[in-house]
View 1 (cartoon, rainbow, N blue to C red):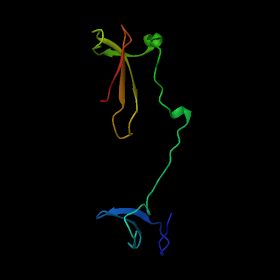
View 2 (cartoon, rainbow, N blue to C red):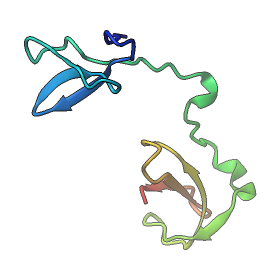
View 3 (tube, helix red, strand yellow):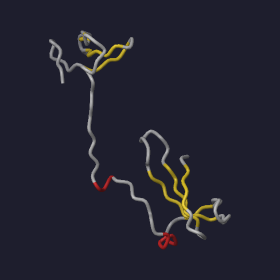
View 4 (cartoon, helix red, strand yellow):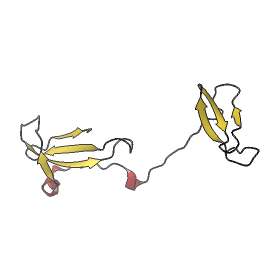
Length: 111
């Protein structure tokens, strides 16, 4: 973190193709001598075991899952169990997984 002479926290600003730090209070800017990684912001995210994606492996428990009308390309059956997971960014739609009630074929729809 870097602070301005006025005491405010400098925030990153990328305008005109240059990376610089800008004070939101007084407007002062501090530029990098070269367009290098001098002001690069990094954050390492570590996920707990509870946040990891769980894929249902066993079609034996398929009877307890909700069903919908979906065409299986493998066997032609029209009823599938489904579940949704957030596999991409939170601002994007979730991924819907389908599993055929007849043959157990699993596919996904990115919605």
